[in-house]
Length: 100
Image (cartoon, rainbow, N blue to C red; front, side, top):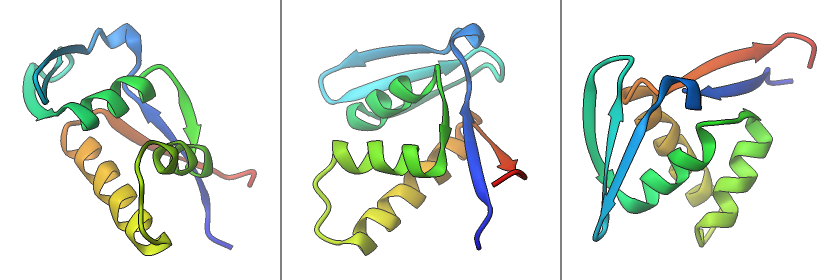
């Protein structure tokens, strides 16, 4: 059985700021001092996740509801890309659930 992970997105307490215009979003992370320009869909998803602790299944289910994927493989690829981008922006930490 694969381990169950919880995703901890950087919380509201870190005061991540989101600024939207047209189809883009600037994400400022005061913990790192970095500002990133992302598309508005990514910014909306990230903003939604920032205040919550999500299990892998909850996160993937919510992600799937937001986008129209053609197949489970496409969903899996999109979800992995989203998580990879979040880690690149330093707004996501993984915590393994040892209790399963």
